[in-house]
Amino acid sequence: CESVHDYFRREVIPHVPDAWIDETKTDALDGEVGIVGFEIPFNRHFYVFQPPRPLAEIDSDLKACTDRIKRMIEGLSA
Image (cartoon, rainbow, N blue to C red; front, side, top):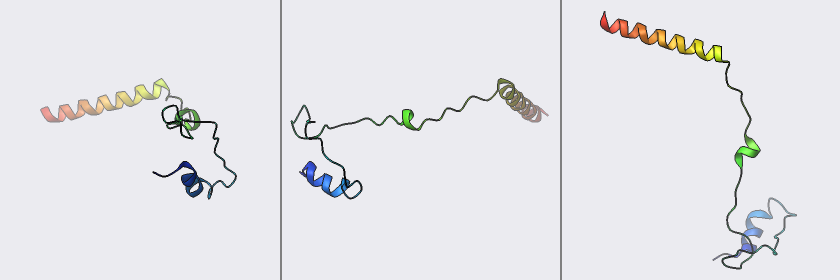
């Protein structure tokens, strides 16, 4: 099994040379350096609110769709 230090030197240091390992953080289960598991709250960092369309615009789209369906049904019975 690879040590956290070997992994850190290979995968982290080349990209973030001044990074360091906080060796005071240990896993409760195995007592080794580092805590296993993390959460990346994508919504908190990347979500951009887009307000809903105006109700009149939605109603207009629904009416157009309903009218199209009616015409299609009429075409079947003709």
